[in-house]
Length: 131
Image (cartoon, rainbow, N blue to C red; front, side, top):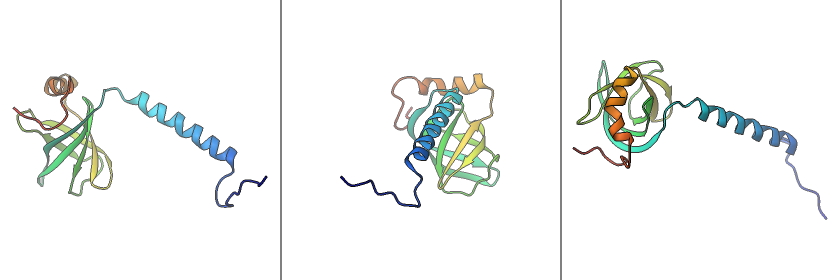
């Protein structure tokens, strides 16, 4: 019977197990921090900045914020406005940056955000917004 081969650059099995346990704890904690239900969507929108408006696509939406894909250089904590066709605009702050993606947190009154988005968040509202 042969012994398992380990690369000296890889952590030992016990360290890998501890890393996995920590990852799972962190993942559970991040899910518990989310206050609002998320909805996977694919909606065309515009992200409006003082310099102008950029076409974007919203991929992930909740009453707290959205994950937005766009081609523009933004800064963390930058104030923006998310405009959908046939909906009232929503003010937001950029809270994270990724390659071609940004995360925004809505800064409007939660009751206002709920009035704007609740009809879309119920039922099968994925796809495009139509009126």
